[in-house]
Image (cartoon, rainbow, N blue to C red):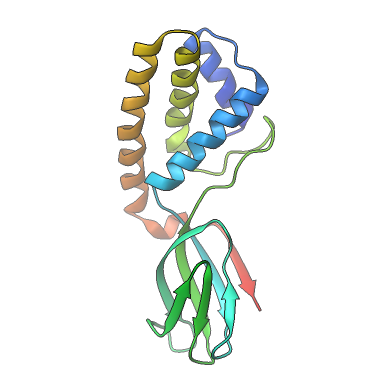
Length: 172
């Protein structure tokens, strides 16, 4: 889904015009909120040397599992501190973690989250616009429903975490 589609839908439903900068700010804020409440999985492969620190992407939130690819088994023989990981063995590893969705930079940008979150982002835009236009009670009511909707959709998506692996990067 494109950011412009979300803006247009929110404008239609709220019956208010939304400026481009405000729409982008709200969409990115909603994306961050979704990233906090619902896991978006990613994986990274590392050809590790013992005792060498490897930087993980800044958007990684949490390591869910590390798999030793050479032995084809999970491992806990690593140390993870502040977006960096160190292994104690000379193997290839797959790091499966959760990350924040990518931010959008313009209205033509694709929003990199599951389409099930579409309504949540549109509702976030509507809630913000309603509050800005003095419709506080309605805006806060929409915002309250939004939290529940994001959690519900996140649970649905997390039932099949393998479908959420989007990128593979090799760190050397």
